[in-house]
Image (cartoon, rainbow, N blue to C red; front, side, top):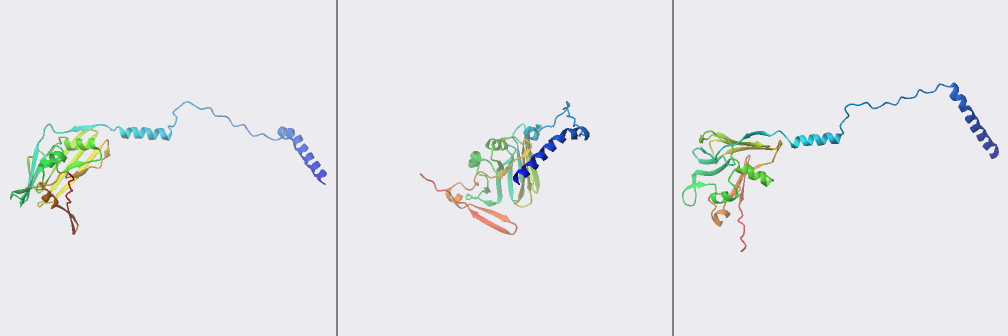
Amino acid sequence: MERRLLLVFALTFLVIIGFQPLLRRYLPQPAATPVSTPQPGPQPVPAASQSSAYAGAEASPTPVAAKQAASETETVVENDVYRIVFTNRGGTAKSWVLKKYDDDKGNPLQLVNGVAAEKFGYPLSLWTYDESLRDKLNSALYVGPSAATVNAPGEISFEYSAQDLVVRKKFSFNPSYVMQVETSVLYRGSQVPAFPAWPAGFGDQLTAASYAGGRIEYHNDESTERTLFIFPKVVE
C-alpha cells in the first residue's frame, strides 16, 4: 500500500514537471513591470533635519530694536498716604515712605532698608533663575515716565530692550495703599519667569528685636493670613 502511494506521488510530480513547457508556450504571460529610474529634482527633507532647522530658527530670532535710557533718573509717585521714589535703574523703588505711620524715632515710616538694599537689591527688582540675566534686569537703565512726579491714582511703566532681551514693568496705584504690578520678560523670543521681589528687609528693621517683630500679611478675597518673621540665630 505504501509503495503504491509513493508511486502515485512520483507520477504526479513527473506530470507537473512535464507540463511546464506547454504552460509557458500556450498561456499568456504577465507583462513585466518597468523599473522606474530616479529623476533629478528636489528631495524631501528628513523629519529630523526639519526639526533641527526649526530649532535653529527658534534659537536665533531677529534682534530687537534697542530701548534704554542714557542716564539714571528718578520718578516720585505720591498721594495722601505714601511717597515712593522710583529709579529707572532696574525700574525699582529707592524710597517708600508711609506718611501716616511713624518709626521708633517718630519719623514717617521708611519701608526701604537702604543699607540692605545696596547689597541685596531694591524693592520691585526682578528675580530669575539665571544669575547673569538677573543682574542685567536689575542694573539696566530703563526708559521710564516722562514726568518727574506722578499723583496717585495713576500708573507708570519702565521699558528696556537690547539685542534679544525685552523687558516691561508696569505699576498701577489706587487712592489707598494698594499697588498692582505687571512684569514681562522676553529672552530670545521666549517668556522668562521673572518674579517681582523685595530682596532686603524693611526700613525699620535695624535691630534684632525689630526684625523679629516684623510680619507679612497675605490678603486673599475675604481672608487675611499673618506670618511672623523668624530671626535667625547667630552662631559665634
